[in-house]
Image (cartoon, rainbow, N blue to C red; front, side, top):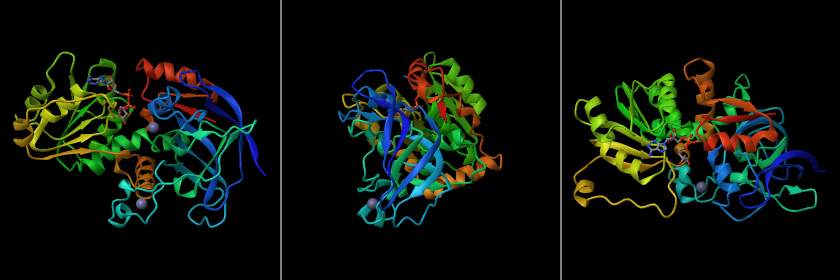
Length: 361
Ligand code: APR
Ligand code: ZN
Ligand code: ZN
């Protein structure tokens, strides 16, 4: 028995998304059917719509989501109907070399639901990042569901499924920010804002927010940044060095994804510091650096993929901290919207008006 539900679909490259009726199969072995309660609007959804990720239209968009498990297929033991879960887009295999070496965030063999959801005419949908959660219900692999405390609001929980986890994880997992560290965050949108919150959580003494948009710097201060640098007006590496006793930051987190900000990150770190690259560049972008500068600096240059997170470890922990009042995530939900307002949310995102718009069902 399948079900028909409403969902947001990108039918063709560049065209506005539309609300459609889709067909969701019952969960097969290893799969879970999830009733979506909230799903954040992320840049990646817009990239799918623009054809920047694949040509496999039509896409079922949405991937930063939380909801309640409605049914599970054979062999599923980790989650059960009624569980409140956050969805993740990296259900790891547990078997590959990366998994066996204890680095499952580099898993070579992540998986999604095997069955396909369709339009009512039978056309198969490609779910964004293997999730597709701008929908009343979606079908995922059970491993994409992590049970968390249901006392958390679905809007906040959903954001941990992508951008907010990427930012917090960039600071605490990849960057290894420790007590007393100085941290600079370049780009203070949803991801960079979360990196600020993550750095504070890890005990950073100084958190320097860098952006070209004064509105984002004001938000960054609300999130806990101790200093702000407007990089339209000020040279970033000089400003960061000045704020850190002449040394540079222990950890610099780049959350934009452009050559100039990669360069700023490279030079803003302490000689023994760590640069964490979480902003995603496009294929044609290049950065030229004097090799002597590359050689002459110690420390580390690391990219952070999904905040190097382990959903089963990190999602429940962050939700617990949030419920205890030790991790304020409410500020990331700029507005809540209905399913049919995703196109409008893309517009607002484009203008930099929001940290996150969140569809609440
Ligand atoms: N220098 C500094 N900040 C910049 C610059 C720049 N040259 N260009 C843009 N920004 C700022 C914007 O003002 C904004 O505050 O970067 C921020 C980007 O934020 P969002 O648009 O909200 O994007 P976000 O969701 O945070 O993602 C940022 O991380 O995971 C990746 O794919 C994601 O590459 C993207 C990046
Ligand atoms: Zn995302
Ligand atoms: Zn694996």
